[in-house]
Length: 410
Image: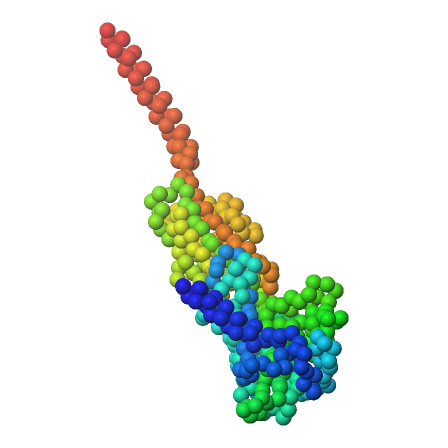
């Protein structure tokens, strides 16, 4: 239900944002500035614009994992003046540098103690960025260009992949018209957000220009056009995988319910130093510290969900049963054990699994099989064999002698 509500909320946000970004076809009556958009809207647009931030989260089988602990900050300032705007009718105008001090959502975060949606092909996790022009006084009609800057200082440290290491920008054109009768002040009638600071040619003859500059809804996946002018923006991505550790016991019914101790050692990939939480079948959440210990009985398993891709996991088992030796075989690891003797109070060498950093992972399953083999009494029989032979011969001679004496007496 929580996931459904989150998705419904995202749809409402997206709908509101698209409506805010939408600029209708050219009207016939053009103001002196020659701006594009609906020149005479019935009402002015709201002074608040909502754009979106997206983090796409990947996991081979889980629909939720914990966030990576990444955070983004945002600023808005004056953009470029003198960029040429051409509407569909070929009327031109020049942008003006943004004025005033609009406010913007200062931070968007995906903390490591909150779950995010995940999917094998990536699941969007949209969060709103609100830009408010209520305190901005426009000096006249025209197109005002602003630059929206996203800064992230810990993206690489938490394993988040993006086109830009620390800073990404978008360019927002705000369309302002003259006041109508009864209105005071100049009114906003359109917003358009681009990924490139360039001239904008919206004429029919050069419609692919809009593909080149990439009209977008924010810091999200965007694909424009299908021809030579096609361009693609990618949202930041977080890749995770899952690990299941299984236990099988052979020829030892007496310890079927015994939980054998396991130690998991997590080694983060190069350049990653963040703190991560896992979803564990033992308990939720579970800090992905350097070492995690658990116990697993015969026929059972423990699963760890949401391991950052690139993390290497070493898995070792301890034999805590007194006076029993097991022969351990593993499957599913990169280098498996094969019939390795495990003495009481000893640990196996760790077997490891890993995936590629910053790429789609796959589920891993490692199974430990302990076989208890009874020791044959062959050694004892060989040690007493000479005495058995002598005893047998002695008994034979005694029986034969007794029989001879009876015969002689008879």
